[in-house]
Image (cartoon, rainbow, N blue to C red):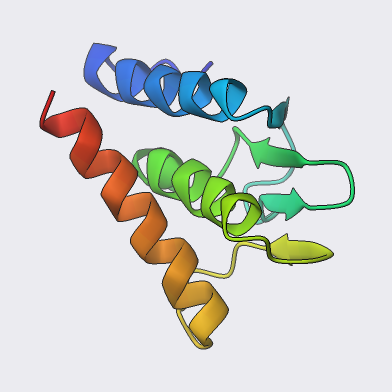
Length: 105
């Protein structure tokens, strides 16, 4: 798990717990810092690159990828950091709502 303070770790754990409760799988990998995390609907799995260049962005990315699976997006969805399509905007909003839920508890 990412070791950048308890608040970040707690938020990531909250997101993982949410994903598990929804029946989603999570794989944590450590690739090049530019390697993008993704959601794989065929395997109901999110794959998170824990070596991402901006560690503080990881909770948002995790929530974003959960959003793709929960919204029923098909195939593979790679995190791009830009909400260029409606599908990406919905995943961004899903992530923000999860983070809000964590902050409001």
